[in-house]
Length: 119
Image (cartoon, helix red, strand yellow):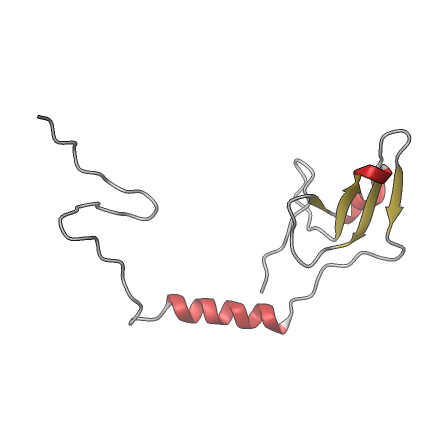
């Protein structure tokens, strides 16, 4: 199941139901249904912020006609989650071994390095 995407507005914790995209060449902001996946140049908005969006003078807003709704989990999302959990729980999963002669002391995302040799 996909994680719930949140509204991009600072301080808002509501779930996103719409996607805002700017068409700078046409001075237009487009607010439509929530995109399938988050893209770097678009913004996810909750219903309140999607409906109340204002733009600078001279710009136009194109809004989706209809109600915004939270996305439903798909079978693909549930299958991907089940496979990820199954893979993480495998006991025969290969474990990374440090290269011979190194003692990295790796723990999680941190790595302990040996003291540099002084001449």
